[in-house]
Image (cartoon, rainbow, N blue to C red; front, side, top):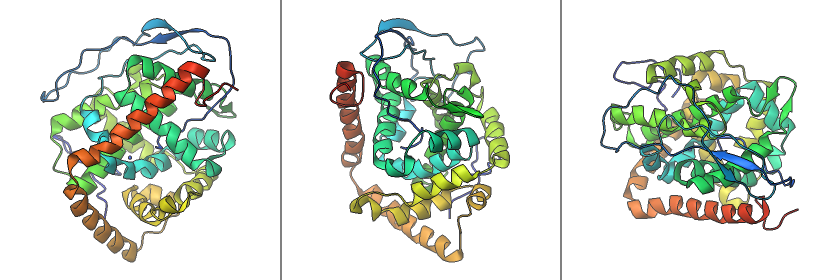
Length: 349
């Protein structure tokens, strides 16, 4: 059964514990070519460091201007608290895809994210498409060059610019902060399930916390909005887990996500992912979504995760790493299309 507590050097109770985490949409309209802004590169520390500097109190500012691609809107990106390094090690393992539904359900617990996704997308009918585009975004955040990030993020920002309604706006930085928070937690939860909760050194948790800010800053959350310390993050996280209300919009999306309309090879894995996601969720969120968690399910989770834990570790690292290699290759193919047409598609519409 999934553990409901995460422990740091200063034990902090956590009410809870993988694309497609950030809910992104395709938009195929073409507009005039405009100037874009890209953040300057930051100096990275080596992964052997065991201390991390506290983010600067100075407000973040956009980086340099660069020429855009066909149909791209002006974008403003902010530097992450720390450039991805430890994060590359984590997302290079395909087992973290198992945390995707967990992160998305927690994102949908925020009314703005749930309502915006339901009213401005055909979520239930486009699961595979959204998985593909979200994976491109996450891959670009961690492995992309500045040029690749500019291309992918420009498409995402263009899609978000039209997602607005009563009580929500897709460019609300608070929504992106919460999205990145769920992605950070999904890494910890899955790592604990597969490798054990005592396997991550404290310095690595601290580094991972800072580096996952890239998921929010890439969606235009100002850098200073990210919690300054890990303790600050736990306060923010616990508050949201205790106060967010799962709406009828979220429950509708949950059914589409947990019982997806996908081809047979993927649909065969749905019951197992559904079981694991239910186990990963904090108890309150599980109850809010009205997901049963019987003793039989708990036993099934224990045995299935135990078997997966053993067999996964037997797979040679180069084979496990081939998944990340493929996602980078696919993302770069998409970037070439964007640079040519200004959209995900092979030809401009």
